[in-house]
Length: 134
View 1 (cartoon, one colour):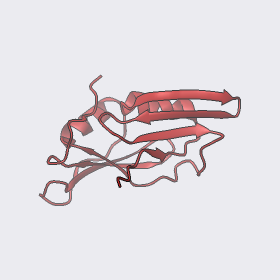
View 2: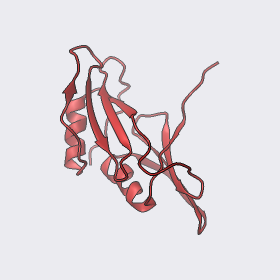
View 3: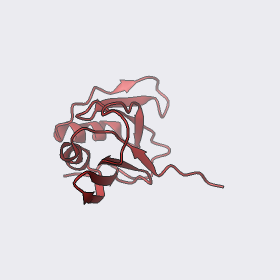
View 4: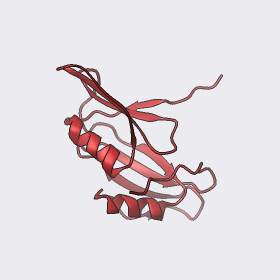
């Protein structure tokens, strides 16, 4: 039996600001942005090439904004991914090389609420889902 991870809930304080960050700055695809009533809105966004999406929302998403830590994305070219993030105005750290083996290099950034993300370079496992060019 396969157990697939499909959605990670990201608690945010401002939905429009978060949508801009994830869609415009990170390049995630907006799968849907649905308002049910004045107290309930949910958005699903998917990183390019990923089978797993994130969900942000109002009235349905639980958790303290900024409390999500350590979600990890994987790319095949970390220098290219970092350059694209910097070009889009994301405050991202320098490349950290923990070892010379494939999978030993990372960059780190936070969303506007302080939710923390890591990007790991794994050349051997990458599926071609690169960060989209503007």
